[in-house]
Amino acid sequence: MDHAAHHAGAGHDHADHVEHSDHSDHSDHSDHSDRADRGGHAPGASWATAAKATLHCLTGCVVGEILGMAIGTALLWGNVPTMVLAIVLAFVFGYSFTLFAMRRAGLNLETAIKAALAADTVSIAVMEIVDNGIIALVPGAMDAHLSEGLFWSSLLGGFVVAFLVTTPVNKWMIGRGKGHAVVHAPH
Image 1 (cartoon, rainbow, N blue to C red):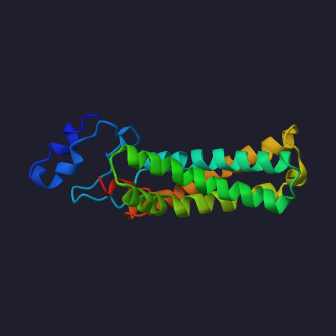
Image 2 (cartoon, rainbow, N blue to C red; image 1 turned 30 degrees about the vertical axis):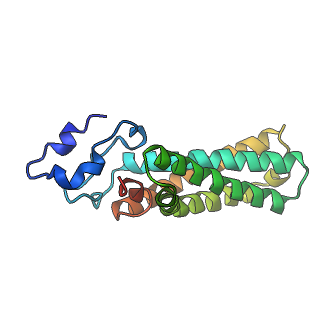
Image 3 (cartoon, one colour; image 1 turned 90 degrees about the vertical axis):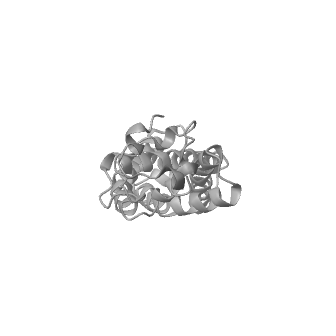
């Protein structure tokens, strides 16, 4: 990634910013257009940045949620244990995606874990509350089987609504240096 424009500003001291020089595997964090010169994120994070952060987090949630719902449904578990498994797996996969990206970027395990927890906890929690709330509210969705359209439409519809609700939350958090903004802080 070419950060020439990012580093071209007058008065930018590269001596204090050496750890930021290696961007060989920086594809997940390519948009620094809303970064302030003071090294943090601008107070008004862009909608594009918030959407990218939400999609990144949602990807892990989708994998975990679908896997959990599919396992619980296939094993004929009740609604509560199935939903608990889906939520647990959504958090595991959501954190894991960020953790692996942070490790790939060169952070040690402890720092990467802290960054993943700080970046994704609120985002995943909001997504899970919204998504599972929608599934619980759709008549028959919790009793639908994997082969039924109601199962998939309520699950995927919940993800869409969760994305729409969580994106403004992430925009607000990133704009205040919280949430996904902390992923940028260590590097």
